[in-house]
Structure formats: C-alpha cells, structure tokens
Amino acid sequence: MTAQLIPDRPAPARPRRSKRQYGASFIYDQPGPRGKRNILLGSVISCAVFAVVIGLGLWQFASHGQLDPERWAPFTDWAIWNYLLVGLLGTLEAAAIVAVLGGALGVLLALGRMSHQRWLRWLSSIYIEIARTVPVLLLIYLMLFGLPQIGINLPTLWKLVVPLTIANSAVFAEIVRAGVASLPRGQREAALSLGMRSAQAMRFVVFPQAVRNVAPSLVTQLVSLLKDTSLGYIVAFTELLYRGQVLASYLHLLIPTYIAVTAIYLVVNGSLSFLASRLQRGSRRRPIKQPPLPGLPAIDHTKVSNA
Image (cartoon, rainbow, N blue to C red; front, side):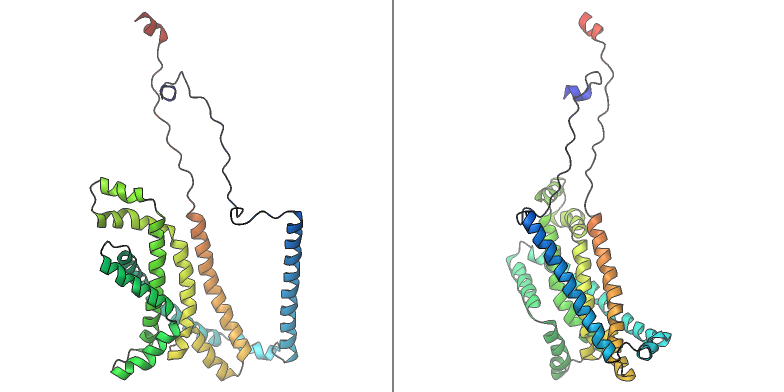
C-alpha cells in the first residue's frame, strides 16, 4: 500500500495481460485439420446447392412468364407502392400498440413472478405458461367468433391487438425476469444497505440495469411481433399482408405482389435486426479504468534520519 502512495517508491510495473478471448470451445471441441476440411467442404456444397435451387426457381419463373417486364410494370407506379405503404403503416400501428401494452403488462408479470407473495407468484406463473402455450391464431379466432357470441364485439384493430398482447406480454415478462436474474445480488443488497426500500431498489437500481442488458432481446422480440401482425388478414385488418392479398387479386399478379411485400418485410425487419445487433455490441462494457491515486509529497530521508 505504501509503495503505491509514495511517489519515490513507485509500485513495480505489472505485465499487462492480454484480454482473454472466449470462443465456442467450451461447447464443443475445436475441429482438427480433417474437421476443418470437412466443414469447408460442407459449406461449399451447401452454397452450391442453394445457388442451384435459386437458379431453378428463377428458371421456373422465367419459363412461366413471371419475369416478363409487363408483369412487373405496375410496380413502377407510385400508386401501387403507396397502397402497400398504407398497409405497412397499419402493421406498424398494431405492432406499436402491442409493444407498449405487452411491455407494460410484461413488466408487471415479471415483478409478480419474482414477488415474495406466493399467490401473486403463482398467478403470474400460470398466466405466463398459458399465454406461451396457446397459439396466437387460436386467440384471434376466439376474439373473432367467441366474444361476439356473448355480446362483446371489439373493433377490428383490437381483435388483432388483444391476442398479440396476451401472447407477447408473457414473452416480455420472461425476458425482463431473465435480465433481473442475470444481475449480481449485490446490486440490490447495496441499494438496501443505503436505506432504500425494496421497491425503490428495484425501480432505481436493479430494473434500469436489467432493461439495458436485455435491450437486444427486446428488439429481437419486436421483430417477431412485427411478423405476427401479418395474422391481421384473418380479421380483415388493413395491414401489409392484407393489402398485398387485395392487390394480388386486383392485378392478377400473385407472385410479383408477394415478392414486393416480402421485400418490404425484409427492409423493416432487417432494420430492427441491425438495431438489435448494434445494441448488443454497445452493451459490451469496456473495462473501467480506475483513476490514479493522489500522490503524496516526496519524503526527505535526511530529515527522517535526523529525527
């Protein structure tokens, strides 16, 4: 300790260790020369097979006239794309409502499942397990045909939003609970030792860190949620896939229309996936450099010896 505080006795320089790189070697053994050669050969064969499948598909499209310029001419008109983009706005609207409601309900369910009250923990667990097991399509049919039988007829948007909220809230709850469980217990104990109540420690200390750690997983779940909104065609909600169906029936261009719809989905979901990857890279914390200790004035050894 003295060697670190007194400037004329500097601490010996420690060799800097290189940062350990963790790979997947703890999951499986590293392949040898023959294994690497087999992996390379399998990759080449897989790419070749994939290229052949794509080529056969394009050849089939061309032989049946699906690649003729006149079949793709309507998609050079802005009115067609405007019609599809209105459906995309409906998709984003439904996804945004489900994300807000499902996220809020998911947080409550996660807190309930981690509660010390046994009855609250059981109720939250039962809801989460049932919501994760029941198919979303079955919930949509229940909203479409079941509730009107008892006099409850929701608007078209909510016939899609309510089932998706029920299903996605359970997934959000498990993601948030996993984020809280991944934090060291010392975070909460340190907050309690400072005089915070349990709710304050969860709100101000534990929960913000947990949400930041699981932000990539939450964005990835939004990608899945955005794809689930395509089930809105069942309730005739004006979303992207429903507009694609109407446009394909009107133009009698099935394949080109669905290829255009697929391209829009790829752009939107690809953007969300890119955001998730950026958040995941940003969540990797850099090692915190400790500030240097304040130096003490140099000691005059002659005065010390005279004393």
